[in-house]
Image 1 (cartoon, helix red, strand yellow):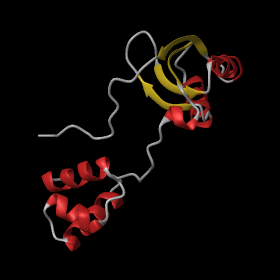
Image 2: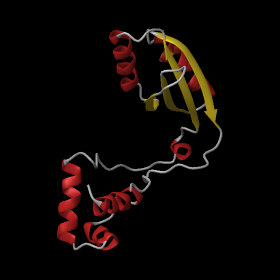
Image 3: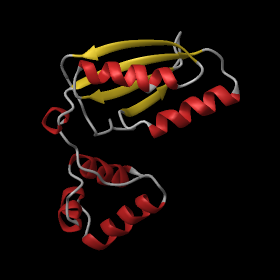
Length: 152
């Protein structure tokens, strides 16, 4: 991947609805090479897809919980089952494997605190192998970006 590919990616991260013509103009390429490069990035899996970025509050999910999970053990079965359940749970938007005293960090969106309580009681508590759940709530967003930093 070269700097021109990164320019294409950055432009598409800012606006995934750009036409090839507009994209080519932004990255200073003619349309045909720009389209070839974009398709190559898609075929290689560098560009995984395109999506709409939706305002959580406007959608009706104003509560963001950051949930740290520690597993009781790290056997293959416990980890595999936990990760399977994470994939199946729609309230969990992101799950990171992390270092430190906890094993995972989840980003969870829900309607209100009652919904979060139900999520913990009926979703998380039903996953075997969880030793601890530690929750924090985001009460504001200072920065949220989908555009990667420049790689040198």
